[in-house]
Image 1 (cartoon, rainbow, N blue to C red):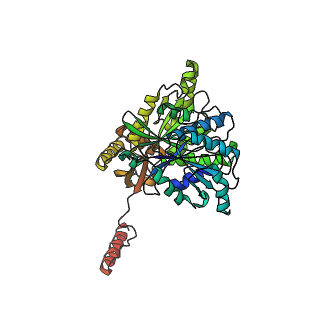
Image 2 (cartoon, rainbow, N blue to C red):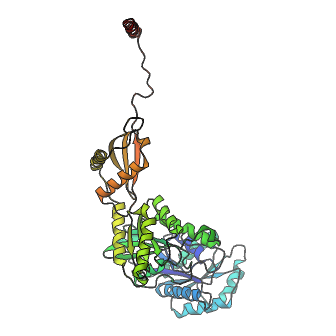
Image 3 (tube, rainbow, N blue to C red):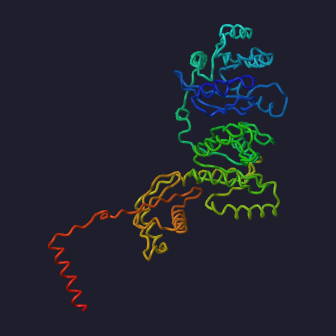
Length: 467
């Protein structure tokens, strides 16, 4: 296991900025306002001689409100699992009584503490360190996370304090070999509840308040011998309702998570009607070529009449993705989760299925014999052969003549034929047509004088006979 370093402090002191610098990523959402980070965010720092896990946490505000209490619980879980604690403070705001309260809690944990005085750019470092030396912490250093100044010294200070790690091959690979699954949907659809239920612990904050999740959180999961990387995303509302800048960035992060995933699980609240925003998310996943599973959550709270009405509405509006598996679940009580994960595995297997050129060509010939494309100017388009063009999603390249005039209906026929032949469930299929080039195109035949005279004599003879 890799050693763990937790970043702890008040809200808006620069913990997420420092996290992004240490992990050389932009995974953590950063904004000039307190309370942006709420869940625990994990990453790996590989800038030093040995890697270690970095945990970004929400700010400890000391306010006894619902969301702050849930955030503080996540921070305390990070403190408990960490080997070294980096106490991040704000040099511009100075030493506050709230910092003493946080430091007291860190000391009670018995873990090694490093005080990182952030935002020291433009200030007299000696005066700043003199003020924060009142903490009585032996290891204290200035830095500016926004300008990546002093972070190297912080890593050098952390490394000797870490215990010996036993990095397994799985950890060294990171997410390699695991199925990346993005959980998307509207706010309050139950995305975080689903991940907590799959993990069997309160890994993510769950609240009735819409918009609880802001950062896309990646969580590893091993279930039934298979490895997954679950990506919890922020709920997406209609564009007209998105006003805060943080929410706009959360939407961008969600769309990036869809693009980075291999399978997208779209969660739909069975108690609410299927909204246009749900269809927009499905459409975006299809445009990115991602395998798709539709999870209908809170199914256990409906009576039979409500279930029938819900199914009729889904069948009517989701006819364009009839190849996607629909699973009825209850994230709160855990029903239907085994079927959901089986659907994820099948969708991933279909999306990454290896196709062979010879078999694709035989399948194309059968499809062509069963139903030929409509005539174009009195001629039928010819489909010669097919070969694979990639996977995730499966791409089939078909070569022939007059393929530019093939109707969309015939393309759907071919897509359904290939889907049925190879049992491709839960993944879109892309078909690309290639027009065969005429080898004589652009060539002009030049006649010799003798050939030209013979041609003229033949024309004159034909004219005489007609007279």
